[in-house]
Length: 306
Image 1: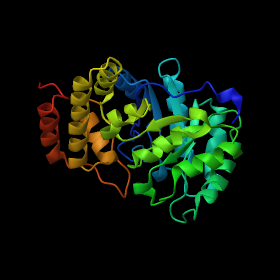
Image 2: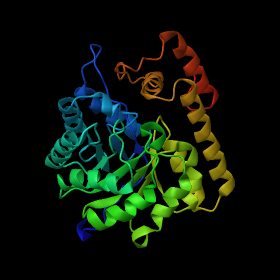
Image 3: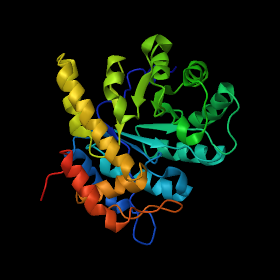
């Protein structure tokens, strides 16, 4: 691991934002300015863009470059971190996106493996991400694991062990899979030097108990996480547990309305931020369901009644 990156960490509450689109389905980079305002208002520190909830795999390379440029531009001096996900269905596009992310001075890059032709073992994963990371030799690199979406059920701790010996820019992992003990195994590698992000809202408190302090969030969960972290650090487990319950309630609402990018955009609309439609094959939440969503958010205390 390159010592140049040993002090780099993704810190605080990190959002996994949706990708704003115009009504005609084109990407809408100008909307990122309003999105940054919205995230900061909701106590978000940084972003992990163009991942699963950002529909990254549904956009062209050119579109992803446009949106990455917008997030870096509008997030400058306002967001602590802009991590650009560069995973695609093929290695050439991922290398292209990694190179571009470094050129625009993204804080870090992350990459998952293609999931149509899947890697057969952990060594194949590292073969892939090693070439992607090499395209951005001056940018911290994170492996992205979300196995219940990709269908790549391999040992992420083993991937990290191998990658730490081969990828100089490796900094850590964004782990959105549900096997939290695997993330704990990752924490034991490299003398505990790896930077770990957890992408499961419902596992905040468990992750904190394992020494993992950076969540990647969906929805307006920033205030909940900040209160949970404050209570945990103060040894107030009763309050921390209640805040975890609050996070779980929001996750249940999110799942009730699809648990996907359409739900992210529908929740944002309830807060006054219109991010446009999702891209096919996804479908937007029907307008008739928006009042029910708004009421559910009010009932759990996330959205103030008008």
